[in-house]
Amino acid sequence: MACKNVKMTVLENNKVGLVLATITALDRDAGENASLRFSVRRCTPSNVTSLVVMTSLNSTSAVITAAASFHYKTDGSTLYECLVSVCDSGAVTSLCADDVIVRVHVTGVVDQRPRFDKPGGYYFTVAENQPPGTFVGK
Image (cartoon, rainbow, N blue to C red; front, side):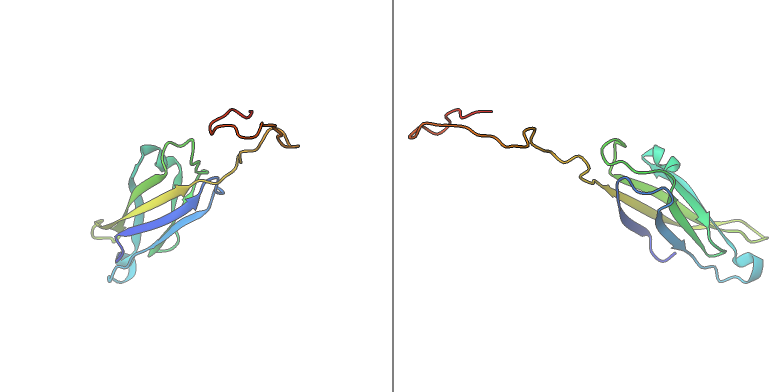
């Protein structure tokens, strides 16, 4: 893996199954020894391992998808980091040769817009020449 950091931004309330990243690695061996295995080794915060799924696409790439919907306000974090490893699946040895950090930044969506509670509007009367800070109404 040439890139050591993968960064992405996800809007909260995403759909389950949303592709967060596709990871690709190369092994210059041939045949069975060129096959690679990808895994999520650790994540922070620790609950993120239940929020992401790693699936191998073929012998050189894998996709990370959202296993749940991220919630900006209730998950307690807006940044999730996972350490992803690629390992040689060859017959001779199984070496984890490289790592990449996948960072997912969750941004909020305005889903509860503030609004005035009187749809008809507010009307107040104030005598002229009142000093600044004079109470007008609420």
